[in-house]
Length: 343
Image 1 (tube, rainbow, N blue to C red):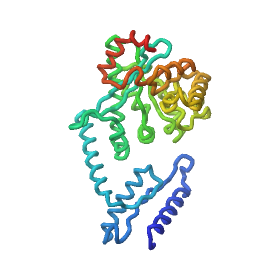
Image 2 (image 1 turned 120 degrees about the horizontal axis):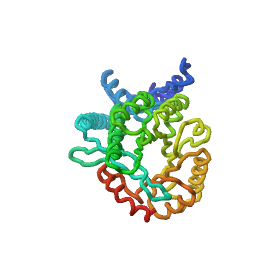
Image 3 (image 1 turned 90 degrees about the vertical axis):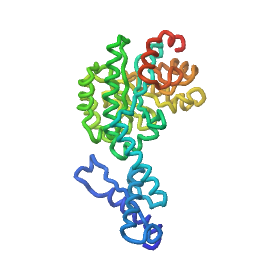
Image 4 (image 1 turned 30 degrees about the vertical axis):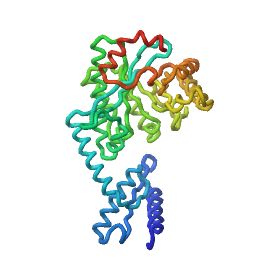
């Protein structure tokens, strides 16, 4: 090889060959490669330095979800240092209980009553304050800490929802997001069973939310897991519905209770006829399968009125309340009569 173009072409050939390599598990397993490239002499004067820089480039390719090649760049050392520092902070966050759950209310569109909340992860980052998952979640997925974090979220949400039961609040469910990594690395039904057992929460009060990408990575295996979860008594929702595969071919095969319309369609519901048509189709589809429909990202009275006219069942968004600490959510529920007017 005499140029970067030669190296790139060679990397592409590697990706293709590995992707086409037969596997005994071929029907269930997609094999891909991540390739890092360092060029002599610009990226290193000796083999050790070149290998180190190619390794950094390879990890950058992995961060791009794999099946990708990446050239070494001079700022990768700085990125690697920042990532190592964030890794250490996240481990400290788990050890010192810096993570916290906020809850966004979900409202019955007909009665205006609070029916539950979605649990959303936040980090009380020392020296910074409350930060959202966009700051750290992708890194947690790369370094594997996401498994411990998600397990904590599940247990904490169940524990908190159990306190709602004990405090005399009306029956409320709590929605917990599941990640693709949990389905690949853990027995989700066992994790959920343990969280329910440890907390004492009524299984009917737990709503597990999963995206279409989780479902489609292995439909049969996920369907089996979901059946076991339903046998436990928990509820199942498909989150961000409409942004992925969104077809009857998989929804009808899954033990699902509700579909959540992605906020990207709700945002322009009043101004974009295409988004309005998609929302209408999802509601019709869901109701034909006896599923409840939840619309996310409701921010205006006009959006709410249009969703009500289309027959949507439940809504969630800033129009009713931003994600809030648990104690504020409890106060929000106790002040519920005021919601019926705004709904």
